[in-house]
Amino acid sequence: MAEARTGRLSGARILLVDDHLIFRQGVRRLLLDEGDDFLIDEAGSGGEALERIRQTDYQVVFLDINLPGRSGLDWLKSLLAERPALRVVVLSMYHAEQYAITAFRAGAKGYVSKDMGCDELLEAVRTVIGGGAYVPPEIASQLIVSMGDKAEQPPHFALSPRELQIMMGIVNGRSLTMIGQDLLLSVKTVSTYRSRILAKLELGSNAELVAYAIRLGLID
Image (cartoon, rainbow, N blue to C red; front, side, top):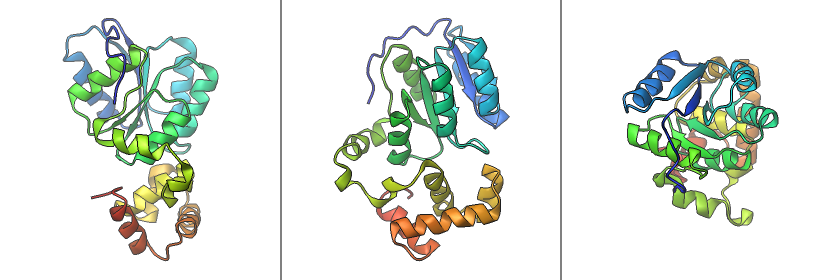
């Protein structure tokens, strides 16, 4: 689902915000290999991104949703508070439409999976620079339905961004220790979030949580 695909790419200034250097370098290479004279800066944290947008006017910011410490969605709000007209595309390793809904409601102009191909990456850049919003085709129809009547939304839509982030880590096989390391949280804190998630979804165990995620199409 994309609109306004005629945005000018030549000379576009782009900021890549991700804590993984190899991923940032890979995206940079994908963009530069297309021949457009992109001006690309990188930031390894939300704090660094905030400093960069204070100094530079970017056409597009790609922001990882899974930054350590504060989540990418929290940083999205901070970036937009600093620069309300900033056009941000959220990057996620998950295709869960709830992430996309939360991102758009927080002010994002696009949402793409981190396993995107070059064509999708360029389409997102073109669309957002052109003034439109970009959503991957595979979740577009789900997104339209999910942004409708809240009474029809599944229970996990009541989770906070951090709870959803931890839920997706659990159902994708990450241990509480690993999730804590990823997000710079203690195991005790992650365990508390897990308990809240199970209570909100009225589930009794990780196994039931995984079954829920499969049933709702959040994981394969």
